[in-house]
Length: 169
Image 1 (cartoon, one colour):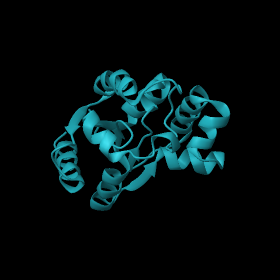
Image 2 (tube, one colour):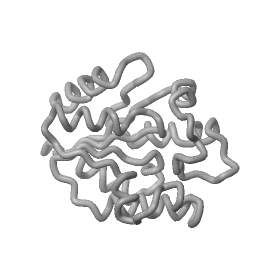
Image 3 (spheres, rainbow, N blue to C red):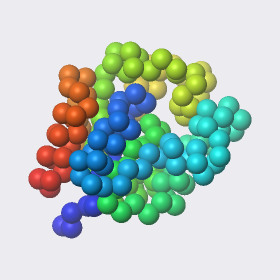
């Protein structure tokens, strides 16, 4: 089997996908792509603005289309937390990248996220963070090639672990 040339990071908002992704890109000499930033650049609007004006389903659709429209090559891809809802988008990532789920506990995430209402998290307004966490975790686990626990270690050690696993495949 041909080695995949990209690494995709999935997980909840606040799990460290962007931070770890930038470290990985620097250490591996790869490109870094944050799909949330890509969406904001292409749409010329913040995730929160898209969410407020067009709804969470539209934001999820934009996220999937952004992933599908991008040709990833030698890249670290930090996905938005809701990337796992787009079946075609996640299938595309599975075909071109090794997928790592950054698994953070709900306690760690709630400690890290202090701007829940401004972060552009694609979910119904009525959904609590606990409910969103319970809904997404099984999806992350289902689509991941590797699960990396992030609570008990810092970002540099997480990056080292990912590099080790990626190089050994």
